[in-house]
Image 1 (cartoon, helix red, strand yellow):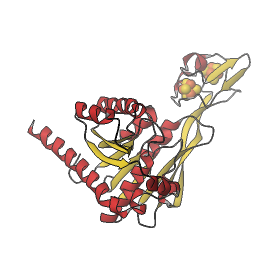
Image 2 (cartoon, rainbow, N blue to C red):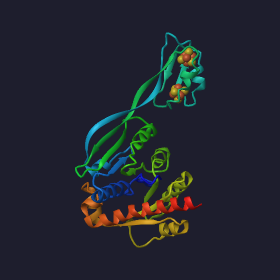
Image 3 (tube, rainbow, N blue to C red):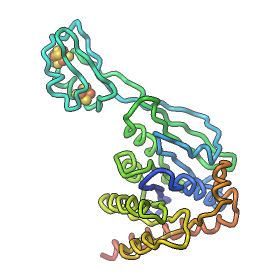
Image 4 (cartoon, helix red, strand yellow):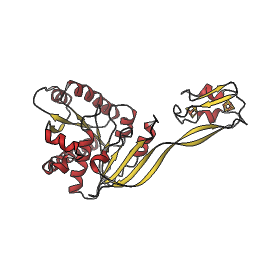
Length: 298
Ligand code: SF4
Ligand code: SF4
């Protein structure tokens, strides 16, 4: 992490419904209180973006996300079948006199156009999603990706959204749940990943997957336990054994659940939480600096 740049922090969770977006938006609101106008929240959960429900931004711009898909000129095509033979995704087929394309299956790799001996294939834009830009009344810069209804290719939209990261700002990335490609595409943009989990065997199983993903990608991570309550110690024991910091515990609390249901962040509904949230960010920055210092000494 270059010293002049502000760290980008992703917030991820092994499954949906753990409070990931509540934490990410609360962190953004708390940080913006002490760094007004220097915080951006990027919602990369493009299949189910919902950070806007908690931050209430004003959207000022929408940009389309396009991928290239093949279009066949049947007047030039000789039906040789080379395109279908080389497509690894079964996204183009030659059946008797017809050449069928299946844009939903297409990976936009361009191989069919490359192998076509007659130049009958042109690559044309197809919109698969959009990226919204705006800001909140408090001055948080807001970016949100959204996959087009019925489209399945989240990765290009996630990449287009995550690439809006501005190193001159404190950036919080709200990652898609799980550990599949869209989550990995998101956390790749970050210097540190905060993993939100619940103190249950289910939560622990998902957390283990998330930690393994971060470790494989070389991204340091820490844990926030949501809906924390006395009882099952599995998550704490696991974190202690792996040497993973527990950054924050958000208690099982009816008032927090009610505030969330009203569309309020922790930082908005309970100002006493702001210092704790800022402390979490400072702990992350400290951990990154220590890692960087250790590497320099080595
Ligand atoms: S490779 Fe080109 S010419 Fe051959 S079937 Fe496909 S589109 Fe037609
Ligand atoms: S661009 Fe790639 S994935 Fe799409 S139809 Fe052509 S070869 Fe198949």
